[in-house]
Length: 277
Image 1: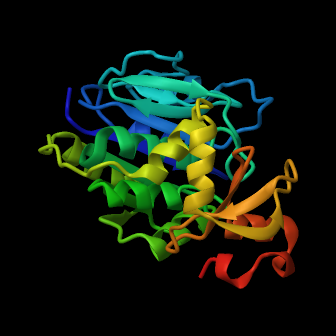
Image 2 (image 1 turned 120 degrees about the horizontal axis):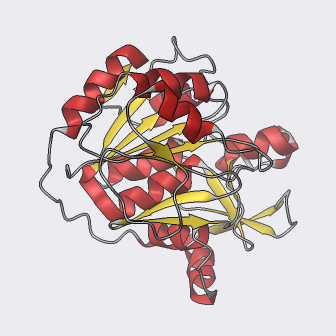
């Protein structure tokens, strides 16, 4: 198994993009791929079957704590976050992020925390900006960022947001992306020492639904209170400390980028300091 792992996020029009991408990967692809595609909680879960038919690699909804195997495509099940531990998979019904579960950012963040510079993060077509904060986390820990060319993407908002906030290693069309993935999969990077990112670790525990009172105490200390309430549960929202991608999280764990919250509530309710550039 290669030292690399690949995490891929997609939303609107993502199934067609994912099918086109996996169709071009070889049967002996030497690394695992993890996919978070926004789907309805009521979805019947056909995406693994679609992707298995599209290309030579087997795709599946994994089980919680399932060991990771090279050459497999692991797809987030409906209404579950897909998270990556060191050598195993976690499934969770932790709090939604940007109103969705599965969300892309928790997958990317967990992979970055567990695998550091071995992670390759891929943002494909989709609306708004889920995946951008997670791609920042991957880059912070030495990983590789790949973004679909917004000119090709059927829904270009997610790729455009990622390009605006992240120094991409590759921005390319899907037909070129498969070759990039194969080249990176053949690389076994030397492990880098990224240290512990406290906020990232707390957010991973929240997504996994295993956070405790100490995590919430530290989150309040790290963040800044706002005069806003969560649109889901009405708990107070705290602005998280990373100014590169303004984000907010409530005591119940729901998380929002400023752009998503603006889309939910209208621009008049979000303080200027929390608005995305």
